[in-house]
Image 1 (cartoon, each protein chain N blue to C red):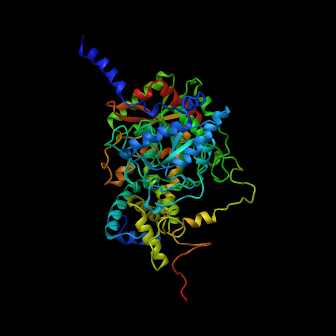
Image 2: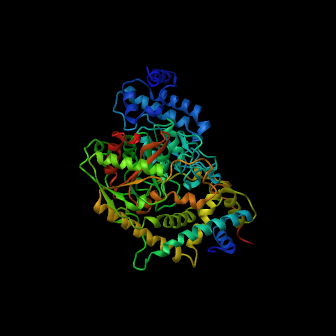
Image 3: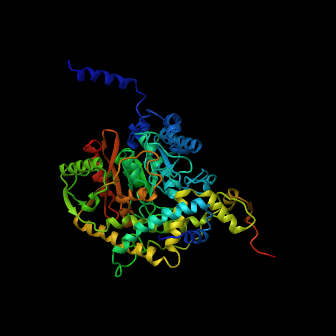
Length: 100
Length: 500
């Protein structure tokens, strides 16, 4: 077994994801099978291979990621807040996080 | 008189009684000519498409939302341009559909998820903005697998889409709605997104050409992220020429996406008509190993033979890491997804399930808002990134991704383009494959390779099994070799590729 019930619980906690007992067991079994399959990557010796961190970076112009630092008006606050679940302009309201 | 000759006049006659020609008959050029000649107005064309959608969409479930006000305003603008006798922009009056993971200002964008059921973006994706600037009339938003995670459109929180060519079958995914609306004549062209095959495979299943450009060719600004190093926006249409026209409009540098390329955008349309200069087409042995449906294989082999007839030279090539692509893809895609989907926390937009504690609110919101496939991928992606497993999974995946990209580099030193099947299986039955996620993932084998390498790919219709179930042939090109694969796909289509 690659992944235990405790592993799934730990990971779900890291991801702030509520899972029912049924979900927990279903996903554990399915992910176990997927990880088993992924294990085939160990057939490859990658000790001398660099990880790929950029896609087609060598085909991009060198200045592709740089631009002038310009101010651009972005007047969307009102619009954004209008569609928020619990707005109190200019804030998003959330449950209390600081204990008095 | 034989029975066959007696049948012929009958068949011709029944044609007369069929409903008016389907909108698949409309092409971008056809729309433009009809508008310029004042045979139809943009508003009339729009009304006609909405009538078709009204008639057919309840059965197909391909559109999630329609945007009649926005479409009408744009059609009026186009009609005013026609009346003024001015030159018409490249997509003037063309009715188009947008996959629901692409942001549309003021129009609900759900990503096929309950967590964004009421989300209304405050801005347009760059691709959408460019389409409208080029005159396109946006009809609505199309159904898809939740957050583009799926290969059958069955992971949508709003129900599956039916394949218009075979209503008991899936349209493919995740851009199933975008493929179905084009195939059913409910849009002239559409935008989809492709992370591991999500444009090309539904294109193949619905019998239409469908393309992803190179990574960075089209701006991702406004595309709601699934896996940022893999996600691409691209066109689906009923003809390769229209795929080229739409790509030309949406491609190009966008300061709002730092990964969009500064490479100039060629006149793809002009490239299409040029004669093929005896290109060398690589056929990788690894893509023809066991696991491919025998009927699909027959069609793909007939398609390859047609390329030979067109004067192409076929060369056997090896891409030795192909068999590791699915494992690599499902590490990288889920890792990036777990990170990208962390933003859905019930604070700023989308669903919130209230609770007195902030952390419990996060957990409940995400537990209630995400569907099974998305949860499964978040768990897997978080796991492969977590302390103690990062090196064994994520880093290993990134290294094998390098090897897969090198396979492509080597292949393009021997061949101008690569021919493969798009999918190992024809469109399958609704519900046939939902119980086993790994089996569903394995069917992405021919498409995820090019996604990992960042190269462009197009799926083009390559016959129908028993005259009914479409098969797609995939052409990969080198980085920014979009013009070349469009030209090949166009030549194939013109030579009768859809009927091999």
